[in-house]
Amino acid sequence: MTTTYEVHALTPATADQLRLQDDAGHTREATTDPEGGAPLRCCLRRSGAGERIVLVSYAPLRRWARETGAEPGPYDECGPVFLHAESCDGPTSGPGYPAQLHGARRVLRAYDARGHILGGRLVEIPRERAAEVDGVLREVFADPAVALVHLRAVEFGCFMAEVRRR
Image (tube, rainbow, N blue to C red):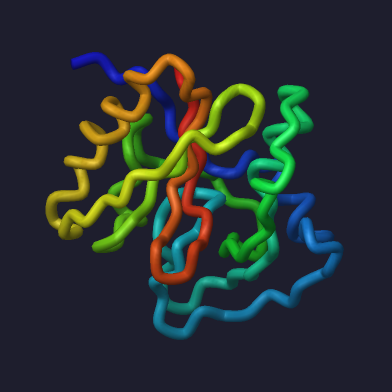
């Protein structure tokens, strides 16, 4: 089955902006991750022990709306995301679902071209079967009204990645 979407990490330019000043207007301090495991949105993988990371506030729908001319209204959210403290090489995996960031419970929030939410889809799939989320994303994008999907962690509501129609 053909993939009808692409998963996007934060662009290097966006990550650089957030390191200087996040979307809440703050400059955040970098730290060393002693154990590793933080979900990095700059490269769509988990941090390794000893890597320097920074936790910033990010408004993904707001930035998408600026790019597309959409008006998300009350769906404009600002929340925490982890980044490498310095620029990195970006994602090393393919265009599909970022299995390295998978947790047991994820929500897929679908938005239309205006930036209005169309609904959400709870995904409860064990980490070892993370590739199955690609099928769920194909189902979500089968609706022609869906312009993009945000992957979020259920427990903390954290934005994980943006998925756009090809």
